[in-house]
Length: 172
Image (cartoon, rainbow, N blue to C red; front, side):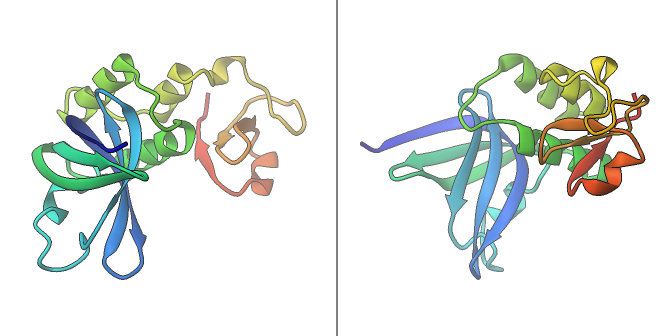
């Protein structure tokens, strides 16, 4: 069964696939996180490429048959990328499941894209149920914790963090 829908979405990431295609990671108001395939977006003649940059709020049209395919997009607002914003979106991308709608998270992301709030990994971790206030190092049990590993969704102190592959600084 094929379905086509139009929704507001915030672009979290773009992942290159082959020469000109990509997978666009979106957080939508109506459906939560969606990773949609888009064709020819990396070509110089692509009309959608400018509308699908991380940090953009866009109206997207998605066709879902054998997986979501992004058909087109029009951006409404774009926040300039910073390392803090990239880190925040990367954290959300690694922890959120597909099609898990959350209007409170949507509101938080809208405030960030519209420059009403700053991206904060600590707040995101708390909201997603990983509050560093109650955490100890997963390896040695010591305090204070310094990083959160998205590989195993655990907290580590500075000394033990050297053994993790992908992590986000917490400093709780």
